[in-house]
Length: 442
Image (spheres, rainbow, N blue to C red):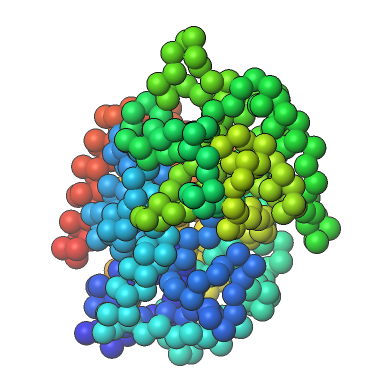
């Protein structure tokens, strides 16, 4: 075992992935996690790798950008993908998990590693770790605690800390769903009875839509603009974009076996939250409605008239850094090469993307500790494109904002459209890259 020690601050998805891989390569890791001594506004569990929002890691189709990213991560022995596949629940084309079993799997896996030490303490000052470790990885995520935010600001400058608002969906009990007014099935037959579908008539949709756009909302206690991540908009924000915006989005009725004559006007879907299927979350119903209005709105859906809500939708403020400005190409702070940043704090969005970021950072940390040059994942691979977006080699829009892996990133070099051939080539390239790294050639 190597005598050099790395501190990883933050036991979320990226911190756990990064810790696991650094330890797998023979280095000692001290993983700092502030829970259970302190919880953020959204965290509830003491376990590592807690899923705060959805329980879905999105598509597992290897030809899609999301599925491709998972395939690439497997080449590095990803703990997060391993945990997800071992705790998966049926969800059609998506990789969804029992969130409690998922976190338990990750926690047990890390605790079983002899060169990983989990320290249940909050790091109030990152600077205090400088003389204690050979490298420090900051993986505190979008809900970084105030004292840690202040420390980060001192290290990178106040102007480089940005934010957006994120929201989560309500969860209801299965026994409270009226299945005489709902049915099991997956859109386009991608799965069996993986989802519960709640049909709406035109009048039911209109009444529901009106209630959504007129619901009382929880306002931010901070005097600032509410900036949302486009890939996880609150249901009321989607509705405000037009009367039929929900019908072409989360409430679309197509692909569920309806004929032209009996097509529902809209369909609200629910996805299982656990393997026992006792809990279901409302798909894409993330919201910032006041709790009383959430109950009122949900009960306007016929199948949910008597629903029992065990978790209400919530909104929370997420921070990230202007990575192209503050990070070097090896993902260290430009003014201190001993500090690495990873995960959603760097501007990637999504569970899988956060884990992929943890892998890339781990590669950089290992390269640094072994005195090698850091060579990033190849361009036109999902991991490589996420990396290039974070450091500013690829841009999407005028401002740097969080992004997930998407087809648009694959078109930065002039290609007209994303194709299965791109996915095939990407896997081949990442195979070469991973083999070279493990062979010590990168």
